Every structure is written in C-alpha cells, then in structure tokens.
Length: 74
Image 1 (tube, one colour):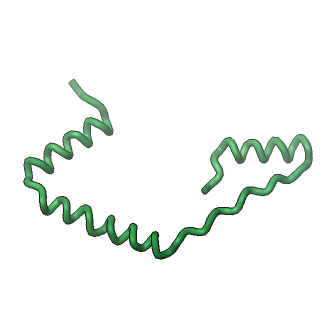
Image 2 (cartoon, rainbow, N blue to C red; image 1 turned 60 degrees about the horizontal axis):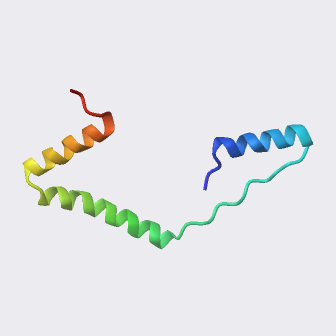
Image 3 (tube, helix red, strand yellow; image 1 turned 180 degrees about the horizontal axis):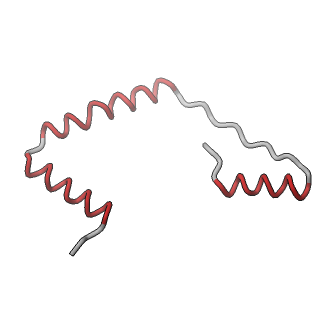
C-alpha cells in the first residue's frame, strides 16, 4: 500500500525533530495469477454486459451514472 500524505508528513516531522529515520513498511507483493485473472474478467465483463442490454437499459444506466457523478441538475 502506498503511503498517504499523513504518513509522509509524520516521517518528515520525526526526522526533523528527533533526527531519527523511520523506514516505510514494505509493500506486500501481489499474486500475479490473481491480477491477470481479475484483469481478464474485467476486460470480458463490460463488453458482454453492454451487448446483453437494450439501448433503453444502457441509457438508463448512463443517466444514473451521470446523476451519481455530477448530482441532480433541476
């Protein structure tokens, strides 16, 4: 996991005030097989779902997505 801004700031303060170096924890390696399977499923799933929907269903889904992203404009 990448460090967030608070973790970085805490390291900087600790090093500046106490002169101590606090190493960042090592990231866990990802399982390559799981990553490739997840990517494969994602690449197949979207187009397969879109092909199975009617134009009206796709339009309704797109409208819901727009409202969720930008809010209701009334």
